Amino acid sequence: MSKDLSKYSKQTRMLHQGKAPEEFHGIVNTPATRTSTILYPTLDAYEDPTREYRYGRYGTPVSRHFEQAMAELEGGYDSVVAPSGLAAVTTALFSFLKAGDHLLMVDCIYPPTRDFCQNVLSRYGVEVEYFASDIGDGIKDLIKENTAVIYMEAPGSATFEIQDVPLIAKIAAERGITSMIDSSWASGVLFNPFEHNVDIIIHSASKYIGGHSDIMMGVVIARTKELYKILKDNHKDIGVCAGPDDVFLALRGLRSLPVRMKQNGESALKVVNGIKNHPAIDRIYFPALETDPNYALWKRDFKGTNGLFSILLKPGSRDNVRKCVESLELFPIGSSWGGYESLLQPQYLKNYRTVVPWSEKGMLLRFQVGLEEPEDLIADLKQALDKYEF
Ligand SMILES: Cc1ncc(COP(=O)(O)O)c(C=O)c1O
Image (cartoon, rainbow, N blue to C red; front, side):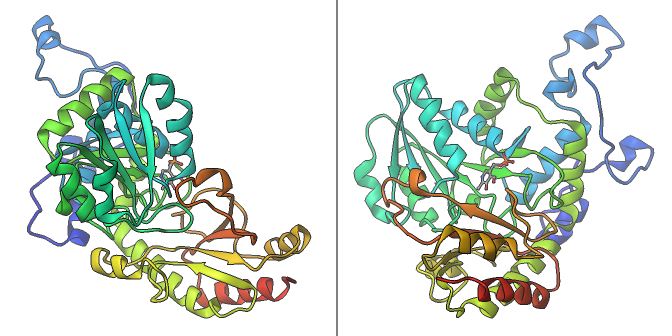
């Protein structure tokens, strides 16, 4: 199916992996293979366990091409698709946890992942303990006999804390603990967790991979054959799959992923530098800024930035925040990020941080810088911030 393109750069590989025109009359992109039923010519064929395609839920050419392309992008063994990023998170956790296990989860985790731990994993007898993103070597003190998984997200949701992933993954490996990372921020382009021995990578493909704000999808990638077997068996038992149209669009999104992310990152840098000294801003959260506490780790481990940053407004009335936010013309309010367009999402972290409690009084606003002209975005942000009375 996919050719061995390992000697080429990531950008070149992105264009040529995960397709097989020869299997589809030369059609360049693998079509959205829609099916539940797959027919077998004979009884022997039906009973043959080595057949690649057996039933729609277990995989079709388009989902397998996407899974293989993602495994190649991250340098892993293989991957499984899920119908959303959150479903990818839950599939990964269900696959490597059982009742009685202890899970170490980073405090700055994507809030719905925390909800899943709180509302579901706890019902299944998994003990969840949160750790500070900057714990470093201190993670050793939290490891118990029954610690089965250490879960990271770097940079973390909303405020972009970066864990020392190489160090934590090394400690996990020494103790025989499975390490996982939600690497949606880097989307396979800005960071390589498998180079640091992380076991499992999770992506929301609804973000930069899809890239156009029109799909819901996720993917879990396993570093080794052994890890993949555990993941794949559970994926089958849980009944997870993804719709062919979404998979088709995610695979198409991969072709332009590095180019889009480069632009998003360059634009975000310009935008952040254009507004960072505005008096209405208490603090900017953006690891690529030298003044950010995560800058050193970002510089050491990451190849660039994406289009996300957050600002903490100086404390002010709700009415004034509303006026400021609603006067933005190029940053409509909406959940998500990673699309072609700029977006604003207010963040409410009070109930989603326990180790490092969130006690800021000002409103936290997360921005996604899209592919618009950065000067237009700066002008729009400045006119809105100028209106903010604090
Ligand atoms: C870091 C992170 N992980 C996972 C998800 C979940 O992805 P999805 O919305 O595709 O379920 C999101 C969504 O915002 C996210 O930001």
